[in-house]
Amino acid sequence: MLEFANQAFDWLKDFSSSPWFYAIIFVIALLDSVLPIVPSETLVIIGGVSAGLGELWLPLVIICGVTGAFIGDNLSYLIGREASDWVMRRQTRTEKGAKRMAKVVEQVHERGGLLLVTARFIPGGRTALTLSCGVTRQPRRWFVGWVAVATVIWGNYAALLGFIGGKSFEENHTLAFIIAFVTAFSITALIELIR
View 1 (tube, rainbow, N blue to C red):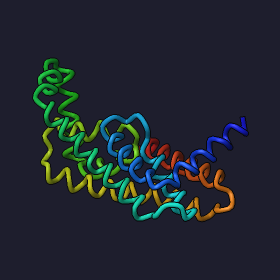
View 2 (cartoon, rainbow, N blue to C red):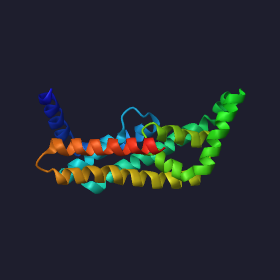
View 3 (cartoon, rainbow, N blue to C red):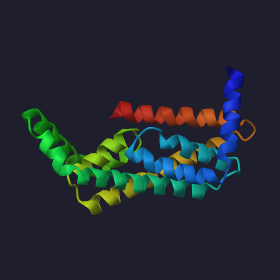
């Protein structure tokens, strides 16, 4: 089992040092905002580790993650906005659905931008909230501004976490990846508990 893990980490290290990894970070960050299948922070952290090891350029890792996430969040918002009439009709047919939708609108108005920033760190939470912002027709300019803040914080956090791990454990790449992932998972779990 340990041999398999070492081989997987060796493959990951080789793959993550390729210039193509920048494109992978961008695409997965974009897709993760719409279809949260693969957590994009994992790839941004890996990119940060590779940058810490001198194999990738940290600013480009951050730019690819932030840009992909920003475009993806806006795409999710637009999908929600386009489906708004249909969703509102379906959700408000029953009293329970109408109350639930009113609660969503209230929460977004009450907590707004802070909710968008926090949701960016919760896999699946960002998709639900960005879609909800579109469905409830939150002002586009407001949404874009807060998503810009959220994605910049998120992209820097994930890439720098990996970078610090990569720099700290240059002699042991496997340990650098493991520590970066455990730290990211712990922070995400803590945010979920606080929420």
